[in-house]
Length: 337
Ligand code: SF4
Ligand code: SF4
Image 1: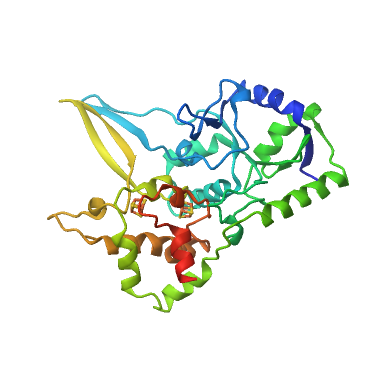
Image 2: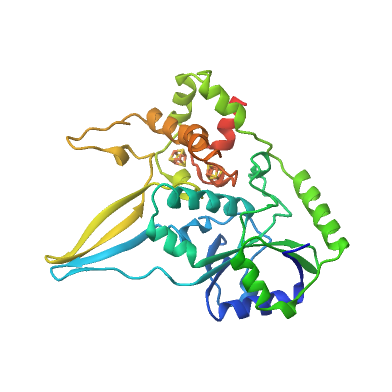
């Protein structure tokens, strides 16, 4: 099949080492605290592929938690380029689905140059998930565990080899540059991929569809007492928003370094904070926590589908892992389904 290849497992590190020669290679590593984080790869053998979801998601490499927009002084304004070339390896299917939606959010109505400059210089190599985490529910949303499109390159681990699928021109280019490493797939490779997909699909503990929840909200079958009970358990830590691969809230601040120079920064923000929509005159449009909790869920379950035809959730399970109040998308959906 066109765009499909086989890579011998023994050739993976050589391929990644070659890619690292002209790009920053980023992948999942285990931190000294034992967490899985995406970071620049110094040693290919440190890459962790058989591991739980990273916290935070790889979103931070195209929409950083804090970024310098430009510097200003009495002499004028200057900005640095975000054009560093990057290959991000080992990304999960749900995170690829999230990035496809972020591309539309930051690129369709109004092009956000900070996001798009990074995005255009980043290639994502994803790995289809053979073993979902207990908190994953992408299967009910069509955002994983195996993808048909949206990736630059998708690998399926078939034991001694990978089935490699090119999903974009950029992906195909970096396979073709090292054509000698890749072979033509046989029927047995596709059969094994199909088996891996079936096995993965049967491994999901959570099977949640959000459509029933959306319909219930639209038809006003969810009373405020329900949202009140959810909001009561919220500690307003913002963890759900910061860790979600699809949350896009940010704030812009000017940081004065001196009396005549400074820097304008963009920082992640969260709609769970009371001051997020604070207006002149100290007006707080969402003063009560229930208003902010409803807004987060409504945004993901109603407004995203209205604007993009897709939910603002890819079922990665990070809010489940993160929330100290044990409230999250899966729990809410379970209660309302
Ligand atoms: S992670 Fe939980 S406690 Fe923290 S803001 Fe989100 S809902 Fe509230
Ligand atoms: S709402 Fe929760 S499960 Fe859904 S994408 Fe965001 S962090 Fe993942």
